[in-house]
Image (cartoon, rainbow, N blue to C red; front, top):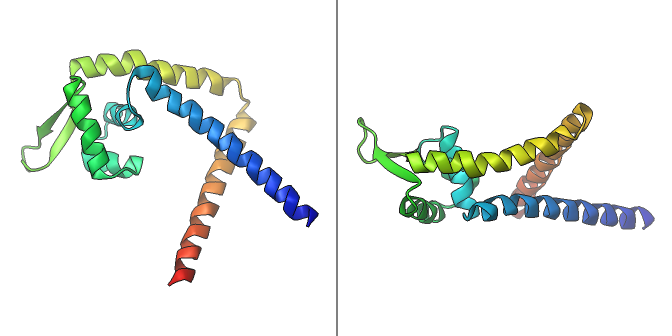
Length: 152
């Protein structure tokens, strides 16, 4: 019983820490005047993701949600869609000059803030944080898959 209470308390503390981190990452887009999907889409386009399909998969958002974000980004003049020569139905996403300037001024500023915070951790802390985050993500996914299998 005592172990169960201790586990519940530590799990609650973990959830709280996760929510705090989520809140911090929610501030990034807000500070730039963007929705979360707009923010992360711009970053992915800046980093080379070309298609809405790639971005949708990476962000785990529906095509409809991404289409709405892209509509806003185009309206703001930050991106343009250009058909591929070999496949006119498929379009690649490109930053406009204004979009590139926006990313470099606002989104990269947020990354510098993130990098400055990261520098304040030791190499061991970097490795532990990465390793444990990946481990808990993998374990939760595995438990979710197992739960699906048990429902069949």
